[in-house]
Amino acid sequence: KKQGKDISVYRALLSDDRVGGCIKSRKSGVKKLLWAIDRAKAKNRQTNLLTKCFSDLKIKNIISSILNAPLFGYAVLEIIWDIIDGFILPVKIIEKPQEWFVFSYDNQLLLKTKNNPNGEHLPEYKFLLIQHENTYTNPYGFPELSRCFWPVTFKKGGLKFWLMFLEKYGMPYLIGKQPRGAA
Image: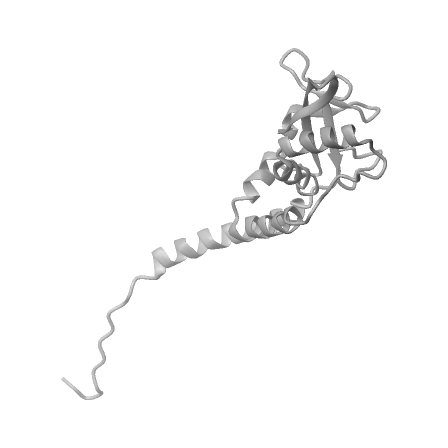
C-alpha cells in the first residue's frame, strides 16, 4: 500500500511456486471434507428441494472462492437467484474481483462504477461478503498474502541478482600452471 499498489500484487504472489503450492494444498484439504444438509428441522419437500439446489451449485468452486477471503482480506460472491418450484433459490454463486468494490464510511460494501468510483449501494441479498480479521477501522480485513510479499519479492530479486552475477562472473577461466624454473 505504501508503494501505491493494490490487491493485484497479491494475485501476482499466487504464481510463486511455494506460495501457490501451499494455497492449493490448503484449499484441497478443505474441499475434500464431507458436507451435508441438516435435515432435522426441514420438511421432506423442503429437504428435497434444498438437496437438489445444492447439488446443482458448484459447491467446491464456492468453497474455493470463500477460501480466498483469508488470502486477500475479503471476498465478494454474487448470487444469481431464480424461481424453482415456487421458491426463490440460488442457481449460481460467482466470485467477483475485489477491485470492483469499496467500503463506505459506515463499512457498507459498495460497487465501484465508471459513473461513481466512490461506490454505489448494492441490492439486498445479491452479494455475499466474506471478511478475514476485519475491524471497524479496517473493513477490508487482513490479507494473509501480505506476509508473503517481501519474502517472495526478495526471493525473486535474489534470483535475478544471482543470474546477473553468473552471467558476468560465471564464465570459466582457463588457467595454465607451469612448474617453477621451467623456461
